[in-house]
Image (tube, one colour):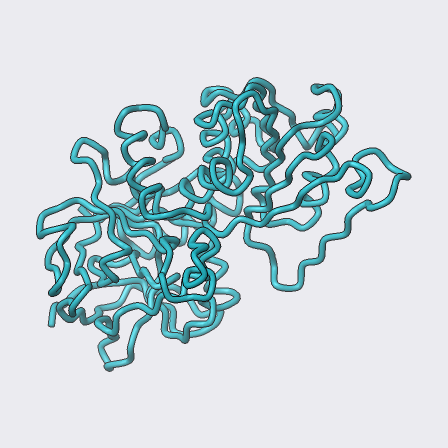
Length: 367
């Protein structure tokens, strides 16, 4: 048993506190990882407020991590102690119905974190999305560990554990964006900017970035946006339609707001695709203009509305995106606003700044 520290949430809506935790060695098919960097994601806050997607409390917070392997269990062959690795929650589980039917991109992610993590009083800890990487150490299934190229900064690479992979995957897998497409991205946090990066990687010709915060529009321009729209000044749907012949081929909602899903649909060209990415409030409802009385109505335009789940990736996608980041084809560093220490004050500030729209991503550093 190893002494460690992690951010523990004792119950729904409880404060996130750094506490001593106990970490047992990995069992067969498991990996013990010393965490080096972890991105603070909106899904962490969602899990505190609404629950850990069916898993009980107490919860070990964090799911966007990267670190170094300390120990592997029996039957683990793709990593060894000392390897830098990415922790991924969205890799197909292989056991859910879609996986069993040969549709792993539709995986329900039926992971149950190995029972190696406990509070000081012996209560089992389950990580956010079965990862638990806002901690000095965690234990995950071997399939949830992906080797990182050694030249890639772990403070950048960790974003591919959730936010960056969700946005990039929404573009290249869920939509998918095709060469020459016109694309609009609504909401330029870490996921939205990643959808922009993924669309560029896929060969989109026109990239329209939409937000209410000027600094985020500037970052989008630096990452390849051909046009930007300040949604606090202009009507986003009308502005997109004025920049295109008849709407965009693909529109991404990256805010978690139901009303923005409606906007994404309304700005589509005929037979266009809208992709909802953001995690909504549990009681959210989307209402679409359906008939022929308004521009952008869904039925006459023959639109498609999709919902991504973490970018719908396969295991090999993470390897591809990590290599693209190492080669400079994906600029993960542009998404990291600050690297903060592993303290309760820094984590609270990361959540505050995230909600205020002041950061793209805060990364908590452990070294």
